[in-house]
Length: 150
Image 1: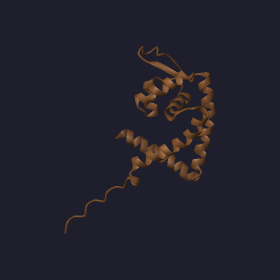
Image 2: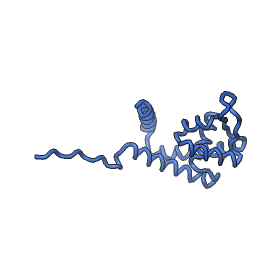
Image 3: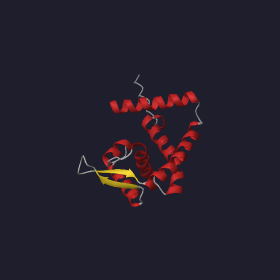
Image 4: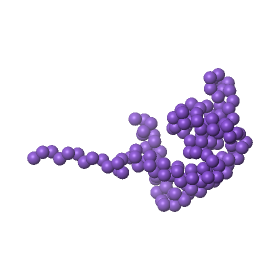
């Protein structure tokens, strides 16, 4: 009797796929709000969110923090700079790079978007109980750490 071939993993059960499509669905839902109100795309908001949370960053640091590629970060920074939401200044410790930071207008937009994003997060997490939310965050953190360790 021939050996039974291994069961093929279904895409809908494949962790990277599940994480990606879920992340995209959540990001798209929040993006609908800030795109309509502020004309920002997801990469632009991610850059603004990092700058709002972490302060001035180089583009290289933004690539690491956002997990986006260099081209997407560069494009987002140029759009934000062109709109007066981000300013660029020389990096005193490295003459080849620049620090990017939110302008007063950028901080204002950031301050308006964060409550929208947090409200959406709250509405999404309503699908889980309090203990499930804590477990979910902890599990995501462990998976993130493991992915970085491998």
